[in-house]
Image (cartoon, rainbow, N blue to C red; front, side):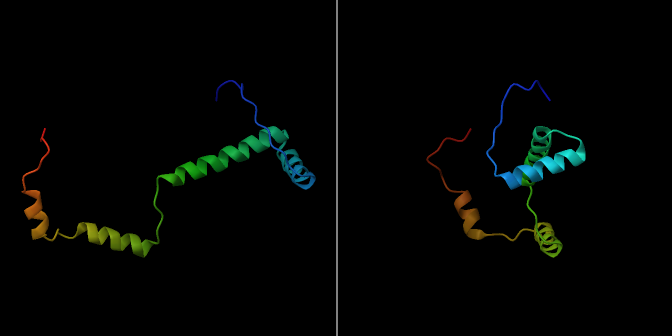
Length: 90
C-alpha cells in the first residue's frame, strides 16, 4: 500500500458511530483503520465475484455436459459462412 495521500469522509448517525467505534476498539484499531479495512474487504469480495458466474452444481454439470457434446451441423450457418462478403479479409 502506498503513502496515504487521499482523504475519505463519511457522515453517519450516532448509533452507527458508536457501533463502528466499539468494533474498532475490540480489534485495537482506530475507527478510521477499521472502516477502511472493512471497506477494502468488501471491495475485494465484490471485485472477486465480478468476473465469476455462480450457479448451482447441477446446472454447472449440465453446462459442462452440453459443452462436451459433439457439435451439431447447422446447414444454414454453413451456407452463410461460405457466402461472399463486402468486407476485406485480412
